[in-house]
Image (tube, rainbow, N blue to C red; front, top):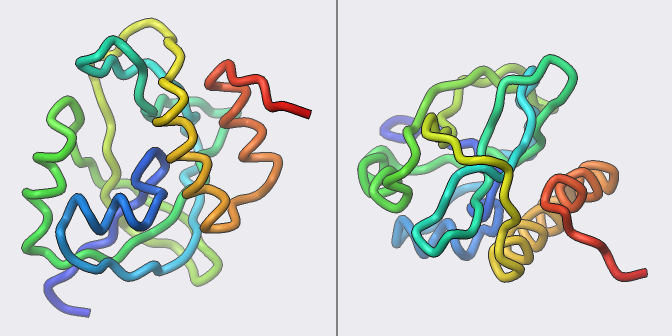
Length: 150
């Protein structure tokens, strides 16, 4: 589709309703995808002192997420929603093949922090919504130092 770009969501933008709110327009779910050679961490310091998700190079980890097709007119708007991050292009793999997609990455890292419960719940809701693997959802909780209730 012309005039669109692929965006890889791995944090709170996994939540489709939040993603559409941020760009003020519908987005198309292309499908789930995996970014190999990176891990998920929570060391991007938010203004309120809590943590947000970030990507970190890691040969032993992979990041699962969702690919959205977004209208090109929203590229700058999307970037403005996350001023601490940069949109960087990555190569990802999905059921339909290899894709080039943009994802947020923050180069100014803090120490590992814990995300606020509301942020984490939004992220987990999106992961569940897109049927990311259960073991990956457990990985997110572990990375967030979140103790799931049995």
